[in-house]
Image (cartoon, rainbow, N blue to C red; front, side, top):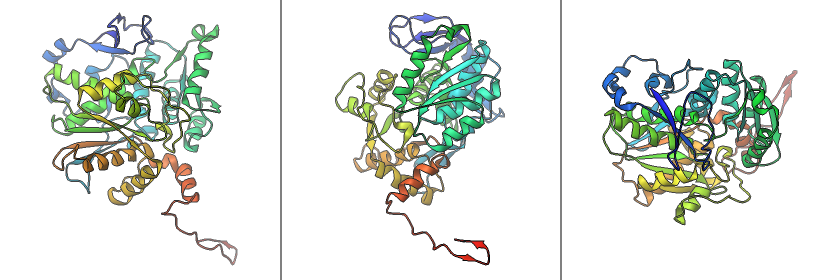
Length: 408
């Protein structure tokens, strides 16, 4: 049972029976808190058997509301064909093709529960598509602000879902400013608007935390030695860490924790820089640029929590160049049969580096997260081939024979 919301900075409590944003005292991120002691007496992990293979199988540790669901969650965890103790958690098989489906399912569920009408989001791409889909399923309005150079699939899917899209000449941080300006208008609350930006409301973390529950359940309630997670806004990292704490309180796991690994693009690596400098928060990354659009987040709002989790878990932060990411994308496709999003393939880059440095040993069980489907990046990947990717192959000559248009 959800009892209250709690500020992750000052510990202030807020009621969970109405929409909430960040802490009014220090703008800290709010976490949903549950009566886990009571739940421990009434619900065991064994009772999950036979439940629907979606994230809502964990409804006992999710807010009580009628779910807006498209079948998200319980994605496969595939044993690597290349590395014996490595698993690939393939989030690209979620509705809308990315892990964003989890957070937006929970978020839209609660928005409808609270009677909100219009949800606004700044997005680097995949969160926009997910919000548009779940708002369509819930008969709510989605108002999306995203960079004009997002992958084409993100823009098109939002249009088809009926969302209101504003393309911004800039980064996700510029899109966030647009939403902030909108919130100053007099119609905002009167017309039922709400900001569902990353970590600006408490329920996207709740949806993402189900990835942690699934990792534990799919490993037979064993905890891996490491989890490598592509980090833009970092909600999944926060959610999984929260899930491990909840599972320990429920008696489902012990006190063991995986080393949590952040991987970012070298063209936008604020968490990596802060980690290497030993700082408690990140600085705005200047001139952010990477083909992995989901990693192009110049300063995550939850940076202080991400860095704290890296320290507590004895994890680390790793960067990957666009060239390394492209190579890993192609490698996973050829070797594993997984056509990963560039952000997801960055996990492989990080694992290779951590194996080379002996941070991880061959016998360590490590879970790599592929956060989305490469099918949503066809225009991005095709442009890189056209720009001189060493793997590019020459196209067949065009021939026209008997009215048949070549090549064929």
